[in-house]
Length: 164
Image: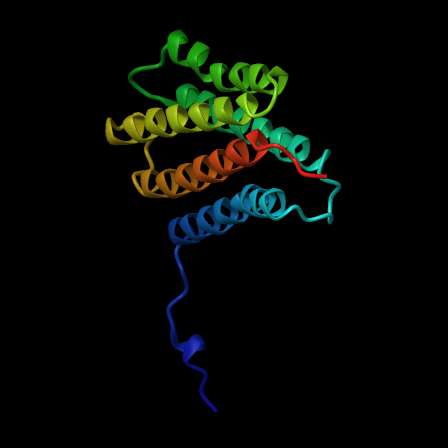
C-alpha cells in the first residue's frame, strides 16, 4: 500500500518556518476572535466583567511581542543598525501599557490603532528590505486585520449599555 503523503518530498527548513509562523500566527488570533464573539454574544463562559480585561491583557502582550520582533530585527540589520530603530521598537509596549490604563471602549480603540500602526510599520520595513523575510508581509497583513477587526468589535460592544 502506497501513501501519497510519503511520496511528497520533505519540506525545507525555510518552508517549515513559514508554515510554523502561519500556524502559530493564526492560532494567536483565536483569543481575539473568540473573545470578541463571547463579548458580543454575552456568553458566560468567562464572566462578562472579566472577559474584556482578559482580551485587553492578551492584546497588550501581543502588541509588546510585536515590538520585540522589531527589536530583534533591528539588532540583525547588517548595514543599517540604528539606535532610533531600537527606540522605536519599545513604543508598542509603551502604547500597550497606556491602552491598558484607559477605560473601555478607549482601551480597545487604542489597541486597534496601535496594531494597525504596527502592521503598517512592519509591512513597510519588510518591503524596504529591513526585515529579511518577504513572506512575513502577507502574514502580518492577515494577522493585523484579524486583530484590528476583533478589537473594533469589542470596542463597539463594550461601548453599548448592558441590559440587566
